[in-house]
Structures are given as structure tokens and as C-alpha cells.
Image (tube, helix red, strand yellow):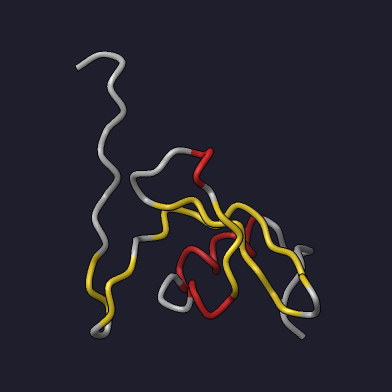
Length: 78
């Protein structure tokens, strides 16, 4: 229906854990010496993008790879 916001995608099971799918990595930063990624979640609006620790996107290797291909000088873990 016009004007209705679609339901977010449900979490999927990855290696025995329920996780939301990463649509894209938008940015990266070092916060208190730890790498974080700004994540666009599959089925969610841009307002719901969230900074996540590197460990929370370990199953989104392609999204991380694509991000660094587009932004080679973006912060990385040392």
C-alpha cells in the first residue's frame, strides 16, 4: 500500500546464530582504538543504519571488501 513502510527483513541463521543481513557498509571508524562499521541493514531504512563493532559484521566479508574497494583510505584495523 502506498505510504506504508515495508516490514524489515527477518534475521537469518548464520552458523547457528540469528543475524540480520548486511546490505552495505557505509563507513568505518576507529572508536577507542577499535574498528567499527556503519552498517546499512537489509530491509531497514537509512535512519536505522548503525555503528557496529568489526566482530558483528564478520559474516559480511563481501560487503566489507566492497566498501574498502570504494574507499581504500577508510580506517582499518591495524
